[in-house]
Length: 497
Image (tube, rainbow, N blue to C red; front, side, top):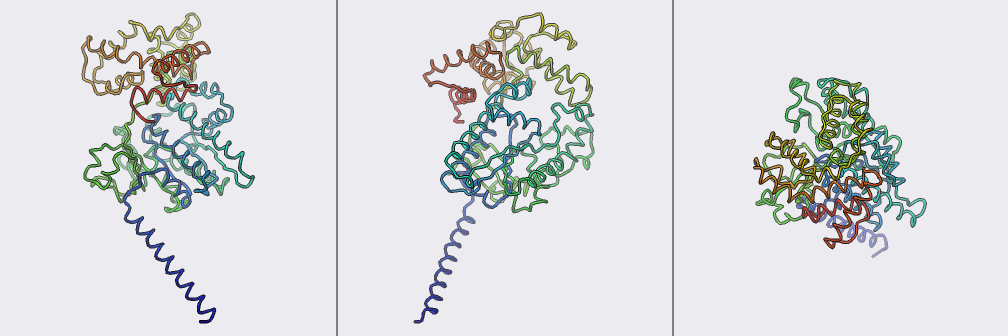
């Protein structure tokens, strides 16, 4: 047998073996209906995708934030163990450049004050926890880069996809409800897409994880008031229709380069008699076409993560009993007053005013009177929170509105257990029992908030209180704010995140 003939036989055998192995991999992928390690699967998909969009399925809450943090952790671990070659990742958040500026400043310095001063009295404790976790991600990358060569550095950048900040942008604060809806439907997502495309033009080799509200990941041409209790009634059916962000990104980069992943909470019961029943204790990644439910919207999203964990609500910074929150309320109202009766300005103005009334039990009709009260009174928020007067005020509010979901969520955000949101009307005696059983939780949540937003004295007293509680529970020490929230969820809520 001559050399060329032998070589030909060898090549044929290699090709045959490659065909067999490839067929096995493809067949396993086709047979496999789901994956029980979503983060690992998604990081592997970065090798084939430009953008992976992960749905923020409940704004301001811990579980969606944790889903992104654990995904970033998985990426770092795979890079460290040489299982991923994607060293240049951008995290695109549902925020504008101004918000990202303050976030980047905190991530670089670890100094909370400018970041907190910017946000107060709005946002949640869980948002602060998410930002603290992002700083931990940044530090892990810096630690790894210290041992990597110049050409092998991990690059991680945070970018805000939004072009407009309704939080304090005069262009939006003063507009009517109808005009605000039309901007949301007709312009916001296309402008965001254009902003992201321009970002990639400046960062051509970068890939991205995009973390946006679930709706922005919908592929189809739809009515864009789904999930909003049909609040766009001021518009006709045709005026309410439009495309979301993912459509424009796929239009630019192609369907195969962009993956949109919705996230859902599923119960054990929902998984019974499905291919996923054996994996009910795991989070599950599944492509849209493999969903087992007949009512699943076809082609709405590319894929899903089905979470088995329980989701709980968030805790508002505006409910923290601190003089700093009160000052921030008044400062925000002074700024917003000149844009009234604009719909967005009115929304934020009323939220600040509600916070003031909640924290003080006062109801002044002008910003100047609130300002005068601050200058002439000493505020002891912790004593007010722990007073019989405050308990009575809460009950009176609840009693007048026993079926108001907004009131129930206010109580939950304060620190009541999740069950309060589903309870029927309680008598005074049952209320007092409920109050006593939840008071320690309420004080614990307030103390966590004080560590982030309080005065120096409030922070010190809060830390001493929290550490004494944790020591009493023999749970070790917590030196960082986000750890206190994890302790609360672990110990009081029996959650593992």
